[in-house]
Length: 459
Ligand SMILES: Nc1ncnc2c1ncn2[C@@H]1O[C@H](COP(=O)(O)OP(=O)(O)OP(=O)(O)O)[C@@H](O)[C@H]1O
Ligand SMILES: [Mg+2]
Image (cartoon, rainbow, N blue to C red):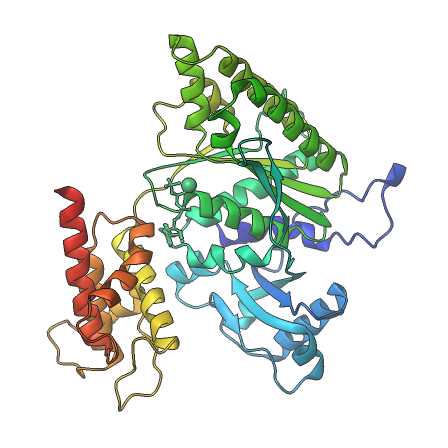
């Protein structure tokens, strides 16, 4: 296991307060060294989301949360901490307090007690505006979308994506290290790295969502270094699908705009180029003569622009692809981190379905058994540790239901994350009496539906 001390490498930036005196030549002070774990404590990120109506200063909120955490003798696990209801500052300003990044630690050491932890508090407020769009002209498609981060639209996205332990943390650390290297002026001729990430894998495994969630997460974690964060989603299809003669202009216009954003050094800019294989395909088609040769110029222009962007320290380029082998080699070479995002494992499938069922229980679409107060289904690791499967359990109890859920998750082998998130809806529609829906019956229908869907897929 990599040390959990690294988990909050990006947290090192938290100590940089932009209100503090600036470094020479009016530049913001550089990042301080990452917090050393001299006291052997584990750095755990605690994210504090302020209410949209709050006007509290981030420093005040941070101090209040730090004081509150000091007073509590709590165990640190990923998830929300109740906002103190008896404190008017919290009630007025704080929407949610979330503990993050403990999963690797918890997996290996089981518990993380308050005295082992140094909480690193990140305060943020969501941007309530939706995406800004730039129409690309006659064809009515827009060539890009733009968000100010952290955006309400991506709230909770990171937490909703479930992968094997480590994937999300690895991406987070990678991006943080890349920014740190640039910030410290490491000579790229001696140590080479860049800020391009490629996520590849089969359709529906959450690649696009993960890119957006990563940008959102970094915008929260690096708030004190970069006061302004933006995500630009380039629509590769609309750039290349239609008018190649227009594409050159669109690319130039787009990168001109991105250039303006990155020139401001307190801006952190994420550029998401989804489904990059469409660029490569355009180039290959041009080479083989089946597309106008304009397209090759456009793709080359885009690659050149990306190279130019790389020299800016405050840009991260996020790309996705359904295929890796067929992607233009020129492109793949540019990416530093190439992470394969595969179909969900049994544990991930269980956890995705558990979150779906818990949501349907919350919404009252699936009803709690009559004699049960609201309960939580067991998480995967707890379920694995519980009694031997042959031991009798209460039929409507959480343990029994969790076991049926596990069977459902097993039946879904081969499903993508996207298919799993749709499954509860399809199962509900398949119920003979959707108005009286107990969890047990629902789960049986869900398993049947999953089997049917998979059979159709493989037919
Ligand atoms: N591992 C996962 N955990 C939770 N949800 C997932 C997972 N994988 C996919 N999903 C859900 O599936 C939906 C589709 O994800 P997304 O569009 O990001 O996939 P993608 O890999 O980009 O697909 P495509 O290759 O078709 O573009 C999202 O709503 C996401 O929440
Ligand atoms: Mg996608």
